[in-house]
Length: 179
Ligand SMILES: CC(C)(COP(=O)(O)OP(=O)(O)OC[C@H]1O[C@@H](n2cnc3c(N)ncnc32)[C@H](O)[C@@H]1OP(=O)(O)O)[C@@H](O)C(=O)NCCC(=O)NCCS
Image 1 (cartoon, rainbow, N blue to C red):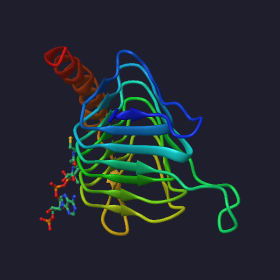
Image 2: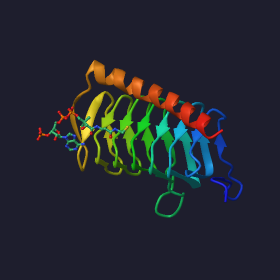
Image 3: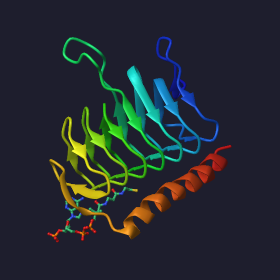
């Protein structure tokens, strides 16, 4: 079975430079831009709405990304949009949410419907962003439910860029290793 799959008429569009591990599953209306990386056991299921992942963003091992359909309980549905240079740690769940550029989503975190994460946010490991929450940009958020903890330092903002760039390079190494 193919790991990048059409669903009905919805065809995933994955840029050539993206590293997609062969155990990751990408289905339907999914767009993944240049130099992004999709690590082992990730599920990105765009069957009933759109998922867009911008360039240089890494989606790490075991993460699940899904959406909501338009229906009687949700007239607008919920797509997923993830900006560029975002690091999504291992085993996160991202559902019907928007994450802006230069963020880090800690390992094991859950980001629920209609959440908006503004640019330059670190969401601490194992946090939960509840439905509709807006996480202001430039801060560390942490906990369940996630609370604003403190402003990020300049060094942490630099780290967000470093982390994204590091995963671009690591993705290239893995892509080469399986060619
Ligand atoms: C939150 C985080 C950024 C550290 O921030 P920090 O301000 O340097 O925090 P510290 O390490 O000084 O810890 C401060 C307190 O928060 C606690 N803490 C740290 N991370 C925590 C987390 N994710 N959830 C709950 N509490 C946490 C510490 O135990 C400490 O508690 P104490 O004051 O009672 O001793 C880091 O722990 C984290 O979660 N990073 C995400 C890493 C990740 O998932 N990367 C993706 C993989 S590539």
